[in-house]
Length: 399
Ligand SMILES: *Cc1c(COP(=O)(O)O)cnc(C)c1O
Image 1 (tube, helix red, strand yellow):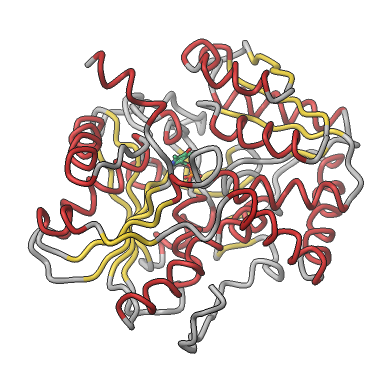
Image 2 (cartoon, protein in one colour):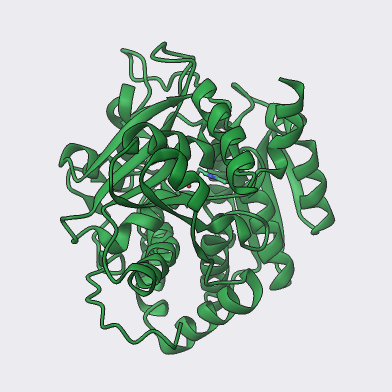
């Protein structure tokens, strides 16, 4: 990266000094005992991440351990197929196979600087659990991962990986026994164990998590911007990313938010279409409300209870969403579309054949949306390839 000489004006969103609100969204809706803890965490984040020592250590591990910067690859076959110039930001090439590790490295360093002895985390498909167990092993910290019982059965390989890495798995058996219940269990444990460090995996939950996760993932867009200047000498016209909780999308978008010429698109887990209970497209079909500590959009019934969700992509299968994306939607700075399971599977196969890159089924949602919106448009785009698809190959074979 040192070789880049182009002067680039970076006007990054200031996560360190954000007050926890993104327009009307965000905040911390938690019991008083957590309120104080989260405030302290936010203060530590603000001061520690601005020190040179922290920044150097964070970038050292991103470069030497995660393998950053990840390439910005010109996908010539896909570009020819679509009739538009498309680059892929290769987060699938990171250690552990997805973007999640950017955030876990950042938060675990923060935990270390704060003197934490135990790390706790929630996980759905197990991707964030594996990234957290990895980082905990690296820094010799005790690690407990809360996981829905149903998810643990569906994702047994990731359960084995986490155990191998030395993490303890705590099964959440209540409710739907999926991600939302794992978050509830982790929050419950956190209330009772104030000495633990809760390492949250997406841009959701109460303040300061959305700003911390947004900050640690913003490395994606910072790199992509430089790399695009190197390759094409200009900004991209459009950005595409899948949206579960919103962390890989905000990671790509953050450094472009003030570049008004750059359009941004998020692909949500549309599941089987606009049928409540069969979709996970929160911004497309949900309404504003408070869910798991933050005010944002939520897929909810008339009584304000979170609805069951469905997406073929476990990483997108969640009724909540980042408060920052809620704000970007309302202000029309970014647009969000529901991509169905069937469309995602088509894109999963297509990218594998065209480029020799098997994407995570989550990332395939972003590819599907790009293909839809870019057909024969002569523009320059980046798709965030948030993860690799090894975990999804077996299910693909069963279809
Ligand atoms: C977890 C995950 C997602 C969705 O989470 P975000 O916080 O929205 O990024 C997308 N892609 C992959 C590969 C994931 O593991």
